[in-house]
Structure formats: C-alpha cells, structure tokens
Length: 148
Image 1 (cartoon, rainbow, N blue to C red):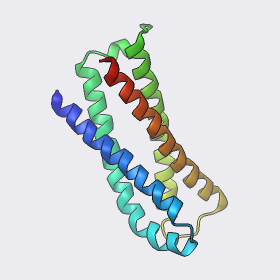
Image 2: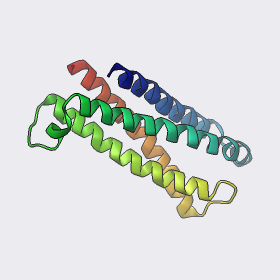
Image 3: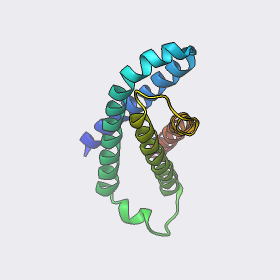
Image 4: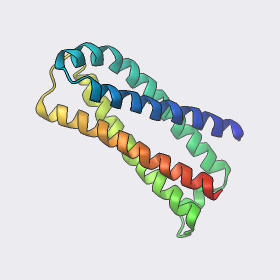
C-alpha cells in the first residue's frame, strides 16, 4: 500500500510543480510574440505530462481510499474531521478534473490557431481555476496528514 502513497506524492509534486511553472511563465511572458513562440511548443508536452500526473493521482488516490476502507464511509452519512476533509478534497478534485478537460480541449483545438475571445476566456479561466484549486487540494492534503 505504501507504493500508492509514494506514487501519489510524486504525481502531486509533478502536477502542482508544473502548474507553478506555467503560472510563472504566464506572468513573465507579457509580450504576445513571446507567448506565441513558447506556448505552442511546450503546451502539448506539458499537457501530456500533466494528464499523466493527473491519471496517476486519480488511480493512487482511489487505491488508497479503497484499501483503507474509506469507500463505503465516504458515501454514508458518517461525519468526522477526517471524512469531512477527505470529502471536501474530493469535491475540489472533481472540479479540477472538469476544468482540466475544458482546458485541454480548448488548448488542443487551438494550439496553432488564434483563440476566439470565448476560447481565450475558457482557456485562461480554467487554467487559473486549476492553479488556485490545486492550492486548496494541497491544503486539504496537509490537513489530512496532520490529523492522521
């Protein structure tokens, strides 16, 4: 079972670390020409890398929930500090997955094209939402480790 925790932590580092890198690039690359030179090249690579990390997170997270006997408790009326924190974390993860699907769909459709205003809004909005919600998930992961 420890393998799942180790892979989960490595994937979380990759997922959140990559998000920070892209956030810093977004802030520092203010010139449109610089953005056009960088994002089409690293965006697809980053997208596949992050998708892999997210899949590992979902598999290892589900594995840990199952093997720790929490699956049935999550869907019961039981409430306590651990279960409430885990439920909140999982709700936020579900929103992140939806935002990731939106972001990846828009990004892959427009990787070598000019985005429409709606596509730009969806791409940047979902990206920022993912970044901010990652911090919320990280907070709840820390809360859970502190309790356990």
